[in-house]
Image (cartoon, rainbow, N blue to C red):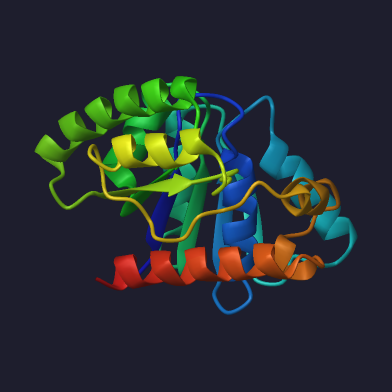
Length: 214
């Protein structure tokens, strides 16, 4: 059985590809995993994978690209029962491909930072997810605090506000240069030298697996 995880957020710059690539890389250490880059033509995840392949670090990870929902569904059908996990890197908008993800995913992870703009975008996305759950009540979704700074008042205030809207993963990804540096080198932070970033990604992945095993 294949578990499908969508990394979804309708605002740009919140770290969808960072989450997708790190999650995929760590999952692939012990599980067959596919990463589908649905943010085309930007293709951050695809570029990351190309660097990774050049360094012979793909291991159990394969990649596909989907410019629309039909191509995404086609890839998922081909990968179903061939890999243990499929990770979908969504585009920064509510489009047909995003709505299709809500009908196909077992878990939606919503990266959000502690800014008002991201809070507003997340509220709009949660409304769309609530509508989807009327047809798919089994759909699970969680907020993920990304680029998180525990010392800022806005982070503490806004995290409390959003937690009223949806369940939040206990793991938070900090505001660390390691994430950007690892991505630029086709690596995950698991293969980088920031111990705290490594612990965050390990914690996030284990938490996601626990939810899926439910």
